[in-house]
Length: 239
Image 1: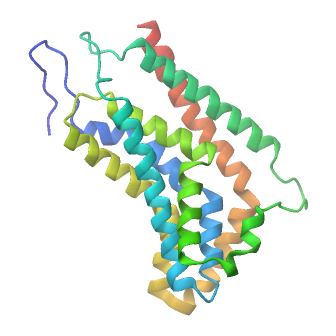
Image 2: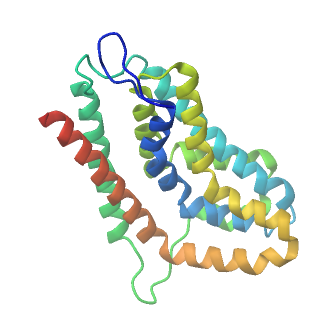
């Protein structure tokens, strides 16, 4: 769909362009080590067939809820008459970028060094006792309350909200973001049901790699997205 201009001459953003602007945020959410480790652990329990999909559904629900809330709260935050974001929008990008930079530094400094043992969350040691509801609640919490994911979802939804597309187009862009954000957590579930017992070796290797590199992965993602947000904000504020 080609971009057009409204009666004031301001260039209108297409749904494709809106999706293009939030792809990096979706990938950042998808590459979330702890949820991937968590779903792999659940797929090795007697309740794997219910708890694995439950965590994935909770993950999708959390992303959707936060994204929808931000879209509704940011209603009318389209571009100014000159086609540039309002100053408060650029300030939000700058604030989110700084917060993500803080998360990146924190994660990098806390990464395991050498043969240092990786410290995992306590809930990972109790997944055998999880019910369907508890697994779903965990997925929602990991997507909606984790600082890195929360900041990325806010950034993505705010980016969608300030385009001048229709409400339906914004909902479609958010849906694409949620699908992309669910790829990391959803892939182990798909592998489990597609390959059954043969998936166990693949999932075990994935879990071990994610455990060891969790902090480095999160730090790099946050650093890259922070650079994008801060760069956009500085460019908008100086124009």
